[in-house]
Image 1 (tube, rainbow, N blue to C red):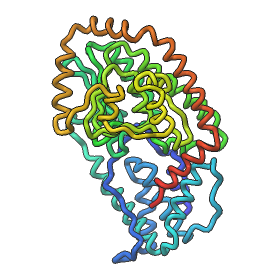
Image 2 (image 1 turned 45 degrees about the vertical axis):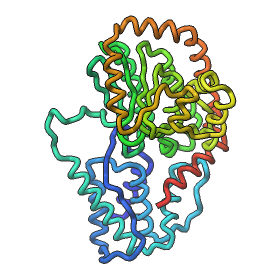
Image 3 (image 1 turned 180 degrees about the vertical axis):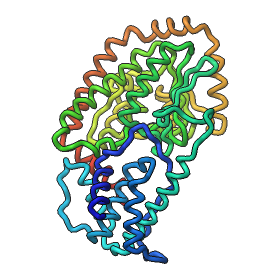
Length: 396
């Protein structure tokens, strides 16, 4: 029985059961290290291991790491094996999660494992209830929601529990959504986020499921995906508006230079911590940011990682206008609905006149940035920075 659960835990932690588009919302799960009021028996523990196999939805990587760590602690005790190498992201994340439990007694780990599985089972059953057809989302629509109304196509990042962090699958889905929006009957296309964040940039847990022998290929394919993704924004023919509903990080900031209008709540911030992660700018920001705000201000953001408030971003030309958070949505959408009634062909042609002379240059810059990032992703500096970030995040 323990062998089955161990194999399941290993399979989960390797990402074999991960569904990149699926957003699963569970209540916040805390692991208590104090002695529980009652102790789970070995039979309870074995039942919990069986329940894990019956979960209807993937609970996410962080929860899988907790399950793995508690299972190892309950069956083997405190972590007593050497830490894996820096490039072995998967096993290093597992080791960190197990090691973080310290000297937690086996009995307590067993109880916490049972409690965690019980919470997951209850949530899975609740989320599995049938909803009316009118309210049911189409398969694969959870992380990205696309609507079209009043002449406006709206693409909404919909991972609020992950601060709308981008997965590789979301890159593909956004490209498809932009392609469809370029051909539909809408006059304007809007990108926004659901929840407190606009977007927290790339989900760095994307780096945890790379087998050691595939690092170079993953870096190459990642650079190609990034280049194609940014190209879609460069080539988009209609007015493209960013409705920045909260903090923005990384690529969600750098892409703003390719939008035609950027509206932000006064609660928004703009942060590009590339150097902190051993990386370099993307989204054509190495060109658009110095052009908008001057080389010195661009360096503060892109090299030193200075975080801007919405007002500062507006002053420096990154944001078109800032609105009070209490009236942000109302004011912005009233304005956009008015703009959507303007003659659509005239707006397309005007954008073409404004943007076309720089398209070739932007594509070249995008290709160069993507190539440089491919090299950065393979560097020890970048790998160590990402590992350190993920290690801090994985602490229980």
